[in-house]
Length: 382
Image (spheres, rainbow, N blue to C red):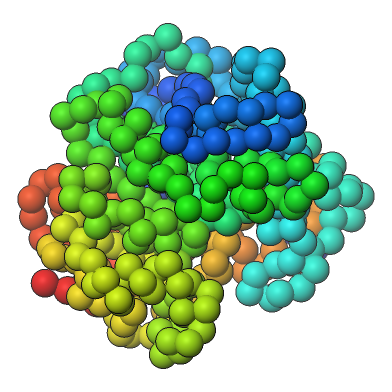
């Protein structure tokens, strides 16, 4: 078995080799915002839905404050009324993290074993990993484009921290928040203590745009977050581009009955109402088939790219949290890692394609697909 020190060296080396970080250091701030149109009641709190917002943004190198660990990115000073709700939210997040990222490997689909540590021990060690984020006294710039990220079901705002830090180093403001809150007596992800039909997605985008009112705003969503993009972004002017990372509908496009049963709201908007999306769209899904994702074909009024890797790429591999166990120090022996470095490499390829997609929009030029054709099947509309 290769040691985790080997994994650490190779993972960090792979990131540096595959991703050329930008000219900026990464500042980090968190804040609290509220959606007054949605009520939340749990753990002694009753009031408007709280967004625990995380913001990564570009700062000049040499102005960094304290380097933060992954655990410190979750630390917040909150009003007492929300203290218990936030603690319970993080309990749910940790349980979900273990279930999704520390239990079964991909693509082997075999149990992950840690020789001398419990999974809770591993979570604590991951909290100690240094991030690329720093405290900063610099203000969030008002002249930079914004990326709003929406996590998937049972995910959370910081699940794609490597993506957030990379784009901040390239000059973007990257903002995310919680679209789940814990409900008493329920599992994490059960949103039954506030209305399931709500405007949280649209409201967070509007809040984000206030940071840089004259700049473009892009939306990236994974799984349920991508579905929320399809349910929201037909509203003209809400966002300037959309990255849809595997809604999971892509694999079921021939089964209308199943789609109506499991994704009825998306089916209604896309197929029955035939909403049109007046913005460029980049769609990912690991179908490994050289054809567009038919359910979503023809929906962009501008242009769209459908991309799938030619090799297997897991649903959770779109999330940097899936890859974090590579960065553990040599205290941890772990099984089922042989193909995981390949998943990390493909993760970086997706980030680079997102960057090219956004750059082509900002520079008003054609999307350059040549750098990606070896790894991806790419189908472009218009």
